[in-house]
Length: 204
Image 1: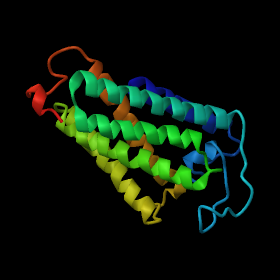
Image 2: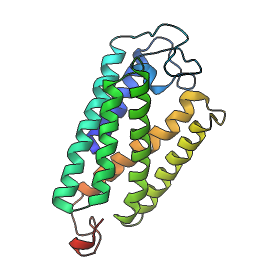
Image 3: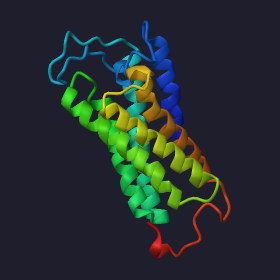
Image 4: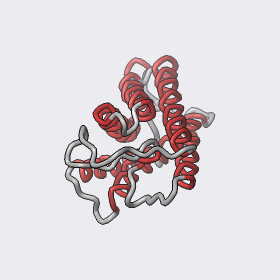
């Protein structure tokens, strides 16, 4: 989780810097993989898609790597800690992230589905982590997850809160990326406080 989220954040910054005229307010994050002018329907674009290189390769590769590492993390949590529900949430987050990289905006329906899966399951994973950690990490997890969920609601309502389409989308992504880095560091720390003091059979 730590490596996946950290490398994705760096890859995102690199891709944004290399994209000509990119706006974090006016552009979607996925525009870094392929920019397709939006119309009223995802399946019908208002114009041809544009792919900038090396931006697209950096972004797509980084988000696919993020997804694969989250899938591995899900297995580790299931196999060695027995956090079953958390592992399932993280698994779907990882699969959604892989899908975002494999299916850029040039594949609109698949891209929208996989990005929604990644966004929703990442936010719910952060909220669920409240049950698995001690203070203050549990509060950070819950707050960041709720912020991401609130931003998802605004996006679905076509509201940007004055941040632009890119800004409100980043209010979904940035909180869960920060959470993943922090949570990954938290569970790497040695000591008995990492795992809640409950019987193994009752962990969720």
